[in-house]
Length: 178
Image 1 (cartoon, rainbow, N blue to C red):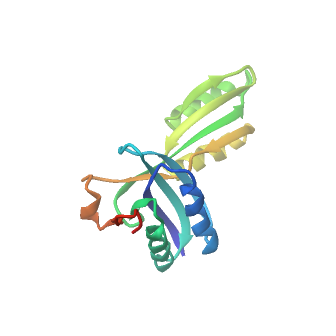
Image 2: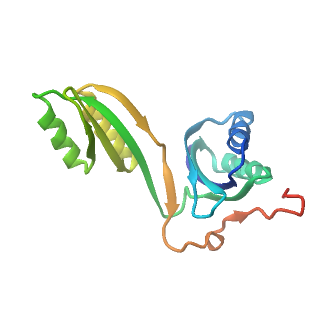
Image 3: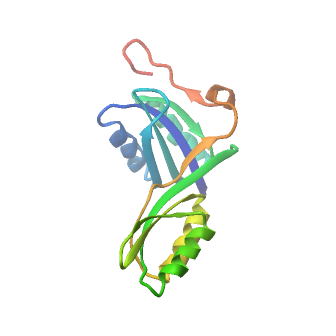
């Protein structure tokens, strides 16, 4: 069992995300993180999800994803050279005594302060998951009041043609089904 990162491109239509989540639920897989947003193609969203499983488990998931009408492409980037990042916003307690120390940590981690209040700071960090985790552990000593994380997003390095990297492309038939 290991952590897998899979990208899926899908049509921007109501219910598609719910069908994808249902597929995982029916197979009894837990989605560790899920990030969905617009892609470079109008009308197509890109989903990046992270789940634990064997290579065989993830091939099964990809096969099932491929059967969903609105999914247009699937790419398992687990074993590919890829840029993987996560965004976190962290509201941490910071008074006159601790503010300088928190700001120094923010600087060391190349994060940024995006909001300042008399008793707290909101910090934004974009980086590899272990880097985000490390900053969170350090900030926890000051008192984290609130936090939100995007989950992993990933993009394969180099050439943009997904076909050359072994991506499966689902080809719709005349009625829109694969």
